[in-house]
Image 1 (cartoon, helix red, strand yellow):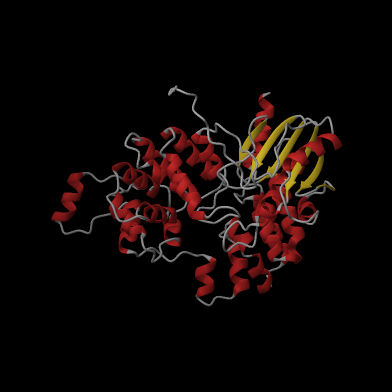
Image 2 (cartoon, rainbow, N blue to C red; image 1 turned 90 degrees about the vertical axis):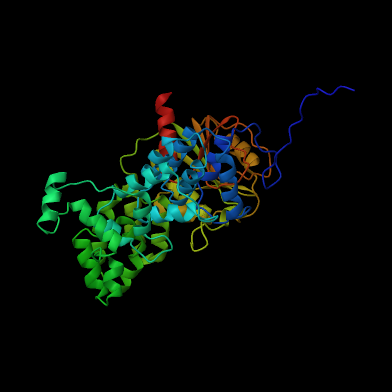
Length: 461
């Protein structure tokens, strides 16, 4: 009997029982899991817990620098908050990660509350010593924020800012002037109150929890201030961030804030906003009467993006699994995220034909903005996922295209063939296995960065 036989590989399947792509490297499996992941939020086929567990397992199989690069990309390009923190937390378990952990953690933390959020995640499985590199990373993060940003997030959470400050041993940077040891000794001898630099005073306020109350809409309204006056003042003083503006459109409309004032700030801040495309969809649904203004802002956010020459076939998945909500508290689903990306693709592709697929393939008018999103959602019943059949049908109905772009969760019920022209498979879910490999260029996530990636790829050719 021969013992040294060829090893048999176990076939893997999508959740709709078609053979998935084989021989996918761990870092690529980690990327497809992370880049569209709102951590611990369940998706149609998988629970949030199972997705998080897969992230933890895959990090241990990947090169530490690749994991660090992925965490930074997920935070900076995909605008994700919690998944990048989990990547760094798991990276900290690697004995050989070294200074990569500290540098990556400092860069990934981009809001003051993420300092405490990371420590809560670090201790999720029980309190344990914090590594030196994590302390260095947290100390670096403390130097990124000012008093207003700290005060905004100094809350009575399980892990407070003061806890993180003490644990990380963050040292203030003297912004005003440096005092020598002799000067401080002289002050003590004369019983004089030591002079504190700007950062020393700030860190003392964090430690004593005496940060000045921030001027935010939450603080003003909780104190009984008039809603309309509060929002108008914050807008005039540029103290309302763009995401807060989008999320408060309903409150402003109810309070009677003039539409022209809101529109002015929506348009002015759109180009530099970090709002994910689907955030505009959520804002428009919250205030239907202001949808034209939100629509204009969404289109303004895309203004100036370079165009892709030639004909494009765009396919958007409207199957039943795409109806799953992005998060437990969200009114938006993956079709909303996919449709918002379709608006971006439509904006950079002057010659485009737009199709949806589920059990059938339906061509929709290549409209712009919110009207395209509505056309996609209402195009056909949301049922099975026959992506292979859809690609074949579109190749026949619209031959000669320079590129085919598919926006999907990759859970096809049939085998997917080659695209017409250059093929891009944009995955907006976090499932373990998918079909977007082989002849397709695989892209994960639902921020505008996935569209910019296509532009960069074609500029290099």
